Length: 112
Image (cartoon, rainbow, N blue to C red; front, side, top):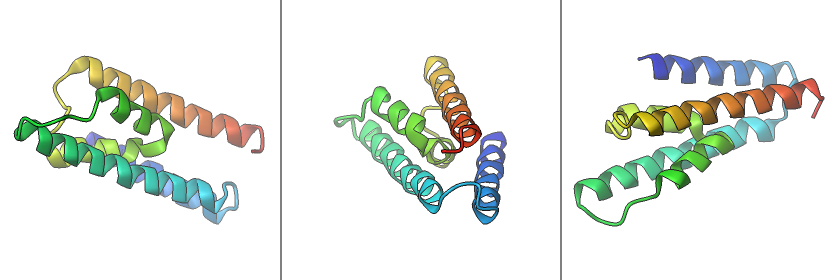
């Protein structure tokens, strides 16, 4: 539930920033597209884990999260019950979220 709340609050904040013309449309669209792609990757990885097939590397999942797909990653973890137990993975995911949000804030501070 916490993860869903974080995602909803973040997306609401992005929407508000866009309406206030503080961020460009491409920023909002990028987060949405990357989140959708990341969600799909988690789903594929979960399906492949069940079927004991080729897996998507944790590094790939983390890179997508870092680039802005983390809302999709958090939602996918809950939807698929995937990657929710491995503490090292969860730590890196939250670190990626922190870095991404700080980078977004810093880019706004610089006026980019």
